[in-house]
Image (cartoon, rainbow, N blue to C red; front, side):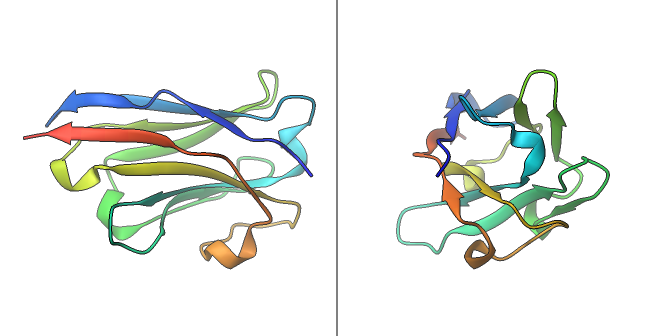
Amino acid sequence: QIELVESGGGLVQGGGSLRLSCTGPGRQLSRYAMGWFRQAPGQERELVATISRSGGSTRYGDSVKGRFTISRDHNKNTVYLQMNNLKPEDTAVYYCAATQRAGVFIQKVDYNYWGQGTQVTVSS
């Protein structure tokens, strides 16, 4: 069992940027493929971005391609989600997720561990 802690959410105006962070206190996140998902009220939890253990492979949800970037810093034991050109439809709770499997994974069922989430609200 690992604990995942997200931070960096908040309220931002449309067109603005935010950077989310996910850390794993006491665990080496480099051993896990990581993902960011989001869930808006009344909606299914959907993939935002995923990154392999090495950081060499990434995948993005169609709605965020070209605007969001996932990255990881093994030295800081942190995974990031840089979100640019935010839109009101990006408003959701954003969750960090981890799996010990190798590769990149776009389905939420592939992930074993989840953080508590951080709220992102984009005003129009």
